[in-house]
Image (cartoon, rainbow, N blue to C red; front, side, top):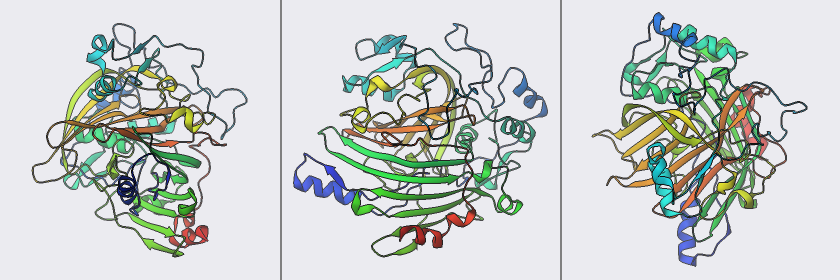
Length: 476
């Protein structure tokens, strides 16, 4: 979950009327949910898998349901447990080292050579290669670094035969602290694996940046901190917390620009939105009041280039879409991007015009689940169709293509994940959303240029920290 922050234009080259129009959009006071707005809706009812299928999680499949073997060409290796070795001398909060710093790209995909790789590129990647000479894809050797704690693997195996979608898809039952569907039978199950995947127990982000960069060099920047307690995966939570279905607790504070400093947000999310809908509050330092915030979701506008359920590539209820599990493909996707997410880079190094600095990025060949989402006939969403590319090893969406009502590719998203062997976990890093109509991008999630890197497993604050009264005290 990441904050929605009212913006201030830090630099601009646009005309005054255009600037006022953009500022008007940016100044909407909207609580924004990221990581995932896990409201647990879907269109289908599913059944648990059999005991025989569960055995595959220790045989030909990994504990999370990925294919254990490599591919026939040897370009995707066998999964052998992932990266769990912590570098000597490294401590939490230090800059997260690149485990493959000595490697050079095998090749770089550009507009000049993309035809020979087209069958392994997303539509969004192709569109960006065609449009921007500055966009390229350095492709490195594939490393299957994904790993989760053994207790999570055990929970998946123990509950795979009981987990199912219930109440016409409005909830999940028979599972806690695990992805529910390691062997998905449909697109709904696959997207819930993304929404319920392991991301650690406590995300602590002392400071991070969100930025919009337009092709005309107009830029907007904000800095914020957030603290997310993933109660769904925390083994130390109370029985009461589990019984009420608390999924996560979230708090954020805005640090800059000065006009927004002190704004704060708190949200409590549950695994059954029908029985226990989200509770959220915002704090306005000008009013010195904490107010209940509306339950935002779906295509509620946030920034000019994204909507609420764009966060974490997709977040929240899937109820407005029909979901199709297309199958698996070998694709060039962002992976092992510790270097891009390094706190040692400056903002200017990373967030360039018209695309982020391609030289800092890393792509690898991985197997992904391709899931198509098409708006239901009786529903509405500004994205009539979306295609998601979900990593088989982590259940993270690594790329997404978003289409308008006329079937035209509109926006393109990438997740550049970090590898954290101390947990272990592969967690979301910088997320970038390109808008092909407007011309520009929105990026969020990077601790670029900050003193301390995000951590994923420190001790979480007490539940009282995530209250309206605590929010008011922090804002004074």
